[in-house]
Length: 196
Image (tube, rainbow, N blue to C red):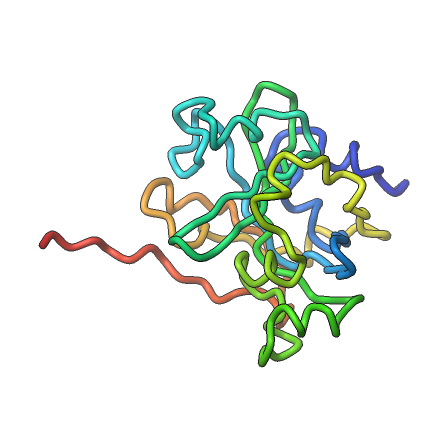
């Protein structure tokens, strides 16, 4: 099988693109990760997606073109980064959940002091910190920062399960990870909100 270009890798439906991103390398600000865990988010048919209700100033990037980076700030302290995929006008993106730092480890350690090598980019907020991704990169053309896996990860090496921390559409098995990979984040279901 021929190696895909970044544009080819990001083309197609989000549930095909997400597992294909596993094993790919993502470069930014002097650090390179091998992606080990991702989550798929679609548009109007996905209540777990930010784009579920259509474009807003925050989510317009999710509507394309493919290859753009959708970065958002959450819980008043963390950034999360998504690669937009699929046809322009149809909101879909893949959350970069975790990775193994394969180059620029000293820089990643400076950005994540006290972290073990396994935890440098284990979880979406840590991944963004290690790569120095924040709202300044929202909307950036990130296709050039992506290097598809060569050779591609075989399907039998990919595990799937529910997305992390969602209250809506939480049962969809749209989280994909490399089975047995230590940098994959721990699964945590959404906390139940109690009144009062």
